[in-house]
Image 1 (cartoon, rainbow, N blue to C red):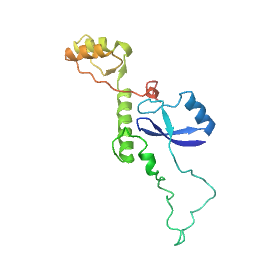
Image 2: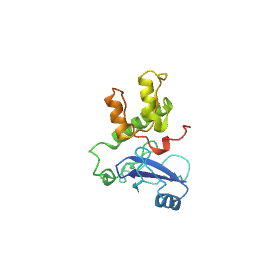
Image 3: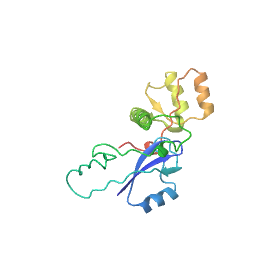
Image 4: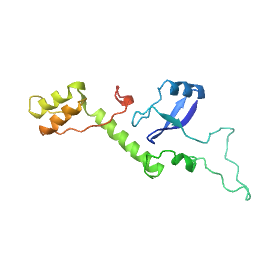
Length: 173
């Protein structure tokens, strides 16, 4: 099993698990690897330190002239400074902060997906029926064109666009 650190062209970092390097290459060439945050398919592999299990027991203590190890057993490896600067589209934000923001966004999207009914392309029609009392009030989601969205807003119906990654549009597990 190969675990790779990946990043989309918008700077979202995520982890991918593959059977081998050739599996990763084949899936990437076919456009099957997409960012779980924005669904972008332009993906690059980041530099990462391999984790090798060569034996059991504790790591050897460094000698005074060797210095401390770069990582410890419980902490993640640090990325080179170049990896963080690879995306010029992102503001200068710590990777930990970006990961927290991505996690919060995914949590919010999952909450919406789990607590709303998908009405598909009938969203504008169903939103109107709920707004005018023709249907029981409930939380819905679906697709609407820009024109339909603007018309709903003009009628005083509150709507909000929510980008949902493709991998969350199917049934939740």
